[in-house]
Image (cartoon, rainbow, N blue to C red; front, side, top):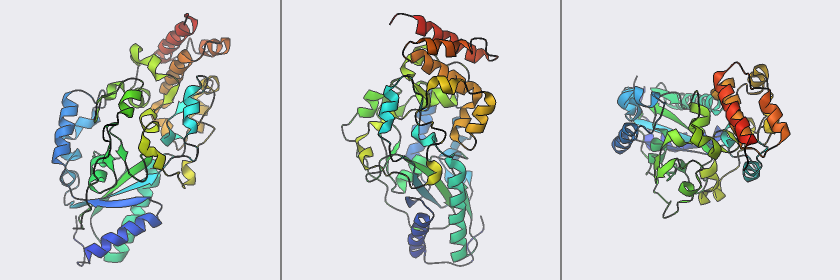
Length: 357
């Protein structure tokens, strides 16, 4: 990375960066160093236990994930930012989960895909820094590279990693996105956030698939977010019923977290729910053609699951729905789907609809 053209007042610059970040719509920014040795050890154990499932990319880059200066040579500091995404009616999530005829989509995925939005604003932040001090070395990341974003954000004072492995902020809960700006600037670092989960275990107890196998340990192979988004192919049969009506991701561990009484509703219009996906009927979603799926999910994170995964997930939810002729008819329309994966899950769902409960 090239060195700055002059040596600015880095303490003053750090204060300015945090204000510029707020001006750009970020809720908060913090600064950390690059030492993640303890987190590297935790990651190594997690990988050794196979808890990453089919997410081979978690191990593919070796130590670059836990060593920012190995990923981007010359990195001295990481500027972490967070942006709130909770819709104003976040409590409505419970009523959707309790209605088996509706499809539940994780609240973060209801609006525009956050990746491009955050990356664009991080680029704006970098340009503002450059306008102040001249050229400097940086790289912006938003889930776009092997980065331990939660550990970096914790070290930057933006929250602690809860027992469910999600970052929690004392005054803002956990409904926020993270992004990072790796930089060669020797900025003063912030104090890491302290932990405040105490003896609470609500997230462990509520997890439908018991994916949180111990405090601070998540087995992704059992996590509904992994099963409905990351996993390709067949969902293990013993985990289908616990999925309920969750068709893209899962928020249970966050919904039950007492710290989310402080969650801030998003002020970002792009994160507002689209196409009524905050509570649509499963039979209607299951009827979407691939063209409709691609058109209605354009620019949204839901695209990540793909059309086959979308139908697979909804088939499981329909199998878990209250028994009805309408549900059986909907499933019947896909009984001979071109996708073997879809056919398998439809057959399971039809059998479940026809069984005595």
